[in-house]
Image (cartoon, rainbow, N blue to C red; front, side, top):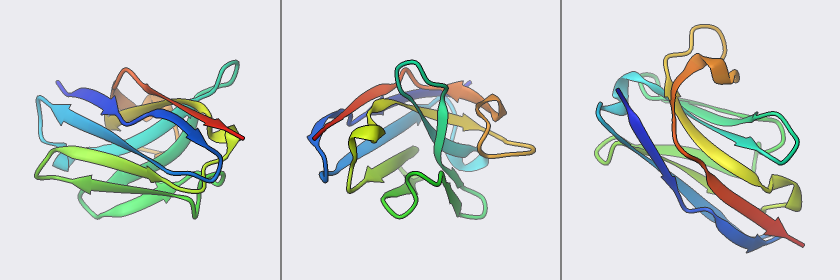
Length: 124
């Protein structure tokens, strides 16, 4: 069992930055893929980014590519998401997930464990 806790959300002006953190307990993350998804009101959960620990490959959704960076700290059993150049359309609840995807890193059903989410609000 993996327990995930996100933190770092908040209110920020457009163009600003935030760093989200996801800390895991229960198991080491080094055998999992870590991902960030987000969900805005009235919308489906959207893939943001993923990190594969074993080969160190990262993936990004088209809407955040070039602005967001995912990185991990295996010693802290944590994965973080650095978000720069934030836009109002980035406003959402951001969720951290852990799993072993078999077909796609971009599908939420591939992830077995989820955190409770952290709210990010970007105002113009």
